[in-house]
View 1 (tube, rainbow, N blue to C red):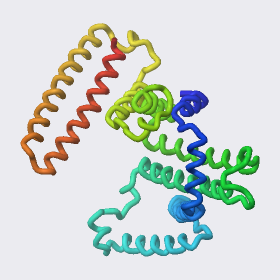
View 2: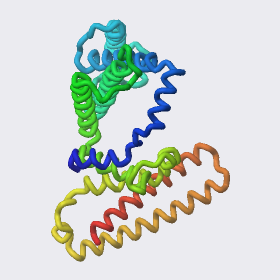
View 3: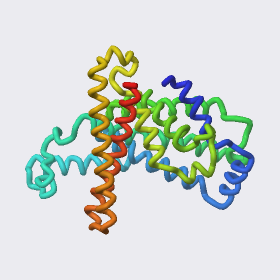
View 4: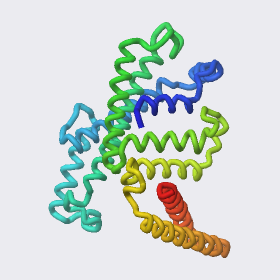
Length: 293
């Protein structure tokens, strides 16, 4: 999906900045120390930034938290090298091979999003704390602040791109999935609705999200179907998928019967996961069937 198109569709599901919403923001500001909340968020961002720099860059930034982190890392590395730490031996984490590259990149990206969001809060703190002015008021955003917001928004996007890389999904597929979840699963009218925002059908939303991801990442999605399958192969696929759907339905029925017998919590949890997996599989079969049709 084109980024500009994604932005256009995202605005459709944005809660509008009504006069009532603005009044609530000003009223909250009078009775709640928003400055303290913003500063707290910014401070936590500094700590995560220290973790990011120490772990991923091997650097020790000028932050009191980073010195403590470096000391703990060195202590733990010594214990790991000696193999005399109970928890280390049990987890068998004596080698960097214990963590996959994908997991490392995902952790880096998630921590990075947190740190960049905290920097956005720094800008928000400036917008909120302008002297001699009602908080957040003014004709618009100052050019300098706008420049800062562009920079930080770009940094957040960079980390989101790294997260998509880590989980093996194109950003375009994530944008398609997000819009499908919101426009087809939550706000079916095509625009924001406060009731729908509060009362969500998570199952319905996930169905549209999974469908969009599968459609965007399905191999050969841009190729004509006749170039992918012969008629006989397509018929065979139909038969297999019909059988699979029947098996899933039977499994769902058995799971429902077992749960009706008030089975132990552990078994109930397993059955719920089976039903969830069945829903995901059934949705993927439907997508594949549509592709063959």
